[in-house]
Length: 230
Image (cartoon, rainbow, N blue to C red; front, top):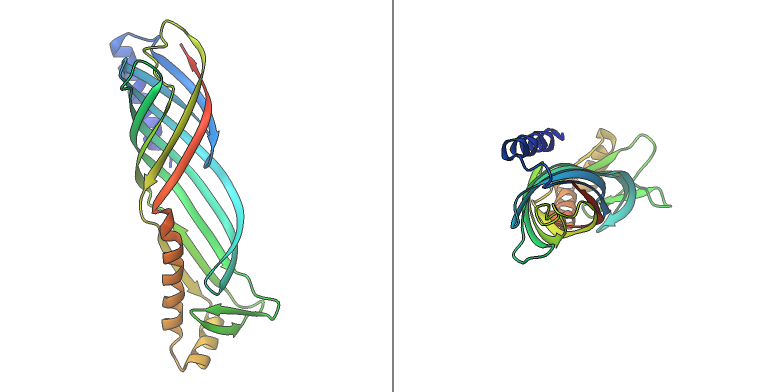
């Protein structure tokens, strides 16, 4: 999963060795909207820095609803990124672009109401212990990133080694993909009520999930942290 970041980090190290400017480097730790992570950077010039990092939020429990469908599930976000930072001014402000390789998804299962029923695509059916209705929303494995921030200008900090503040605000781009399926027992109940049109109701529910998670195609990210320059 994190091999792209490992390869980029190796490339940064080779570049540093070739340029012979070992002082223009840093390591950093950050935490924020999508978890916590660590990374490394190398300064090509006072205006350009290369970075690579990995972050994870672990697995987070989440409950919610989409239209008439109630669910409970787990959200997992892990990602690795490679970035180019451009510093237009003679300070720590920067603009950043990059690519992120990630494993980000929400796995959810139906949560019956107190009446022991669930609603799928507008059709309400009984829901017992033998029944299943599951959904998965998965973000693209590779996504572009754009943002702005403060810090990581390692060439400017080469004469002042030590700790410094870093911050990032940006977005990654990519449309999520949704899958939705039900057990044979739930499909049979839908067929009885709808006169054999269970698949229409299943497809309708999948489309409602897709519409709900499409808002994640522009995924905000925000982090603060500390870097050590050396």
